Image (tube, rainbow, N blue to C red; front, top):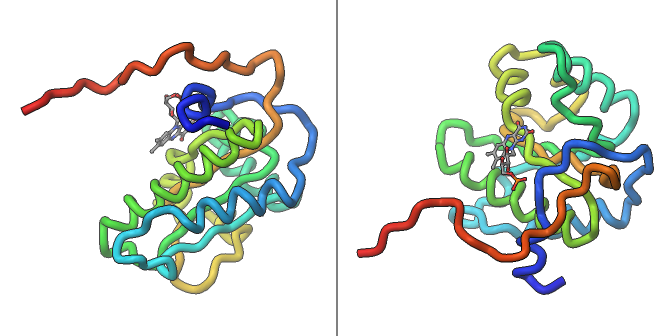
Length: 172
Ligand SMILES: Cc1cc2nc3c(=O)[nH]c(=O)nc-3n(C[C@H](O)[C@H](O)[C@H](O)COP(=O)(O)O)c2cc1C
């Protein structure tokens, strides 16, 4: 897809069908995420965890639904992005770059997707037992994730017709 059309098409999807996401689509998204810009090229400070099995998804859902709503929004795959360098705030930037790259890759494949932050921050702050479901390598902490699935056709957002910045701009 043309890049500007892709940006017009991407939106945070919060309703999915039950159709599973094929592995080759997940692999393409991971390849894009793993080529996002990373400060000082410190790719080894990051880790992607693909959560796809029903058992692991259910443990994450169980935690995310503690507040009443399932904050995984019914995503069929969740890719967590973790860092082993919590002491350097650049890790937050690196994780965000990876998640955003994967969001655009997923949208380009026609997959719904949504950036997850809040429930992951809470899981880490509480050191929730459900973190075990990620089976992370020693020393890695999840900071964000991308939920992915086939979008529920009745909730698909129409692409924007034009791109106008929603962020205020000043020029000097
Ligand atoms: C850093 C960051 C954290 C976010 N956290 C969440 C989240 O935890 N849950 C959620 O449903 N959406 C989350 N979002 C999605 C935003 O709410 C969404 O991108 C924004 O409202 C703009 O809407 P759009 O993505 O449909 O264009 C997050 C987005 C970013 C960039």
